[in-house]
Every structure is written in C-alpha cells, then in structure tokens.
Amino acid sequence: MNLILLGAPGSGKGTQGVLLADHLGIPKVSTGDLLRAAVRDVTPLGQQAKGYMEQGLLVPDEIVLGLIEDVLESPDAQRGILMDGFPRTTAQAEAVDRLLADRGRSVNRVPVIDVSEEELVKRLLGRAAEQGRADDTPEAIRKRLVVYEQQTAPLIAFYEDKELVVRIDGMGSIDDIAKRVREALGK
Image 1 (cartoon, helix red, strand yellow):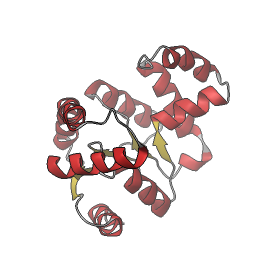
Image 2: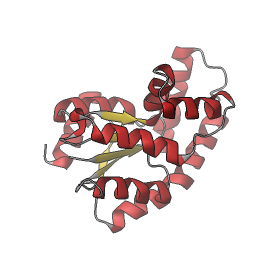
Image 3: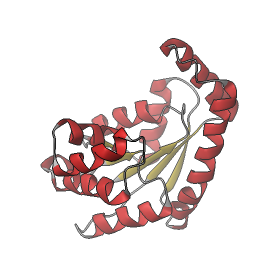
Image 4: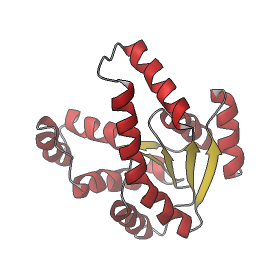
C-alpha cells in the first residue's frame, strides 16, 4: 500500500505515520530523514543535497525524487511506502505518480489528519515549551499554519480529484487516532 500522509504541523502526523508504517510493515519515508541519512552516508545525492542544506536552501525536487526512487527500489518498499512531508506541491505529486507508475504502482490512499487551528496552536505551544523553543510564538505558529494551508489545499484537491483522500479526525488520544486511521484505510 502506497500512502501519502498529510496533516498540519501539530496534527500528530509524524507520530501516526510511524504507528501506521509499523502496523502495515512498510517504510515511512520522511524527506528530512532521507536527506540527513544521504548526507551522513556521503551518497552522491547526499553530497548534492548537502550544499543546499548548508546554505539553508530548499533541496531541489530532482534530488529528493532521486532519494525517493532509491527507497522505492529497496526490498523494504516492495509492499508499499508511507510518505510524510513529500509531496508538498501538485508538481511534486505528479512526479511521485510517475515514479510509482514506472514501477507499476500508484498512490492508494491519502490520509489527511484534521485538527482545529485552536488545538494545533495549543499542541505546538506545548511542544515549544517542552523543547525550550522561544521562537515558537503564537504568531509564528499561526503564520506556519497559514503557509501550510496555502501550500497543502491544492495538493489535497489534487488527490480529492482522484478520490484518494480519507479524512481522519485528529482529536483524542494517540491510540484513538491510530485506530481511526487504520479503520479509514480498512487495515
């Protein structure tokens, strides 16, 4: 099963992604993790990405797609993958579709974890306090949520047009949300 997990910062997407990938026995692909591992392992793509990362620039899509392609070729990913944090745009989604189609595969579902803005701000402020992050002010958090919404709304529409989106209520305990995610996917 090939999944693309979407959710705003603070929605619990990272936590739910790990739980779901473990439940399904498929790798969770986070572009941040892929990039850090490629740089650490001094791979050719990692070396290309390193320069962008050191300058604080976004790593170009072709490098990220190359990393995802490597994962798709791995034995662990033959039963599927769960993508977290990529794609972020419809152009990236179309590129992912091509990568999967080249392997006779496709995106099966796009779970979207929905949480109210009020709850997202509350969760992010709590996380910031736990981690001692003074830069996570309510204003900065709300700005990040606006940017997420602007970038993600077209992506959700792209997958809704393909009838792949399943919405999940992201309120409640981690276990309750995980159960809803599995039920929404029939797993």
